[in-house]
Structure formats: structure tokens, C-alpha cells
Length: 140
Image (cartoon, rainbow, N blue to C red; front, side, top):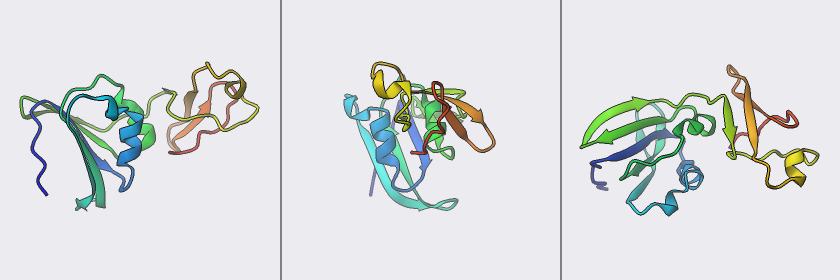
């Protein structure tokens, strides 16, 4: 399979196998007017298998939220065909509208317009808790 290299864009690499579509939906990549390639279950020396997303444009979103979704992800920023930046997203201190609170008594269950805000409460164990009711966030 051949996927052309990108001139200006982003490569999201080392995604857990089968999770590329979750990230595609989370980033709303279906709304882009540029090419997006999803490569599923490709070989990886480090992981065995992995998914990759190649976006043929620079998108303006907070990619650090991907640290919550999959902390092993690598993000490559390509400018003029050259790798300009490679990083692992940090665990953000706060995530907004990434996951929903599953506590039926939470204010977000009745006040639909409130944002779903979760705060990092335990970095070592990757625990996020709802800002309003302190319910632990479920992993995606």
C-alpha cells in the first residue's frame, strides 16, 4: 500500500490498533477539506501493530487532549516536507468536552449546555475527575 508523503500537515503515529477512528471522530476530521489517511493495523517494531492518521493540512486544535485518549501517541508536524516537530502529547490539566460524565446525578446530566469539564487529579495513574461531581472519567 502506498500513501503519499505530506508536504504540510500532521501525522498522528503510534495509535493503539483499532483506535484511529475514535481520534478521527474526536478531532472532527470529517469536516476537513483536505486529504486524511487512516492506516489501520500496520506493523510496528515497538507495538507489534498500530494505527496512523495522516492529515494533509495543519489543523488548529489542541492535540494535547490526545494525551488523555492515548498517552503513547506521537505527533509529527511536517512543514515543507520536513519534520519540524515531534512530540508526545502531555496529560492536560483540564479536558473539556472530550468525555461525558456518567454520573446520573451530576449537574451536566440535567444542564445540557454545561461543558463536560474533567480535571487531572492523579498524573501517575492518569485519573481525571468531573469538575462538578468528582466522578472518575472512563477511558475512551
